Length: 197
Length: 122
Image (tube, rainbow over all chains, first blue to last red; front, side, top):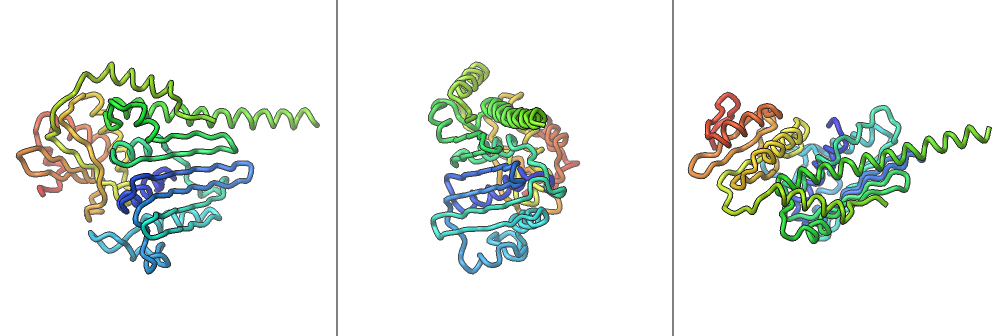
């Protein structure tokens, strides 16, 4: 996968297949600690214990259409390649939490990519499922909760192409703002550093 | 804390309301974008993006777009299935955003099956 946002899309779809009705996605960029953490939590039916220790084996899958499953193995290798790990915590009928960590500055770490496209795709393709997205960059955060949006847009469907179009734009500009704030802080710190010398 | 604010939502709602007149009717065309790991890695998200843009431009209420998982034909991903009421579903293979736009404009809107990209009937 070329982008981490594609991994997020993929793992979130797993949760939907597991019968979840709400999916939490957290992206935490701790740039000052050089860490990146991605957490995808669903409230689906969880994984059977016999599958748990073979999660990252591509030849073990819950699907029935074919015999290989690559979603988690791909994310696991992506994380391990960047001095990170993949952990999966699952409870029967409570849900599954997938956590992947990365060294932020690692040369092999794929870019975040188009998070807005991933989110709107999930929202549009799964009208009955709620998504909660949190993106943190060194303490500044962006939140999106489709339960709140649905409450506020009661007479307009979130899957309407027009709504999706505007939603994509808003998410994109909010994330850009978050990034810009971060750069501003970094610059200020740099200047402060110079002033102290 | 940055957040999609109520103001943002109101703006989205106002814009959308202005652009979408009241809509009725059942969907009788269904477009399925297959989004398993294989589809996503092969570029299904870009296909879906193109489709959403075309949908917004076409402003048709009888078309429904859904996503689904892998259907077992990973080598021909991204796959897109177009189902029109009264005829067999057509599966398209190796889609990209341009092919998606063509299928949307010709097959979905005009009813001309694009046999060049078709994998087959289901």
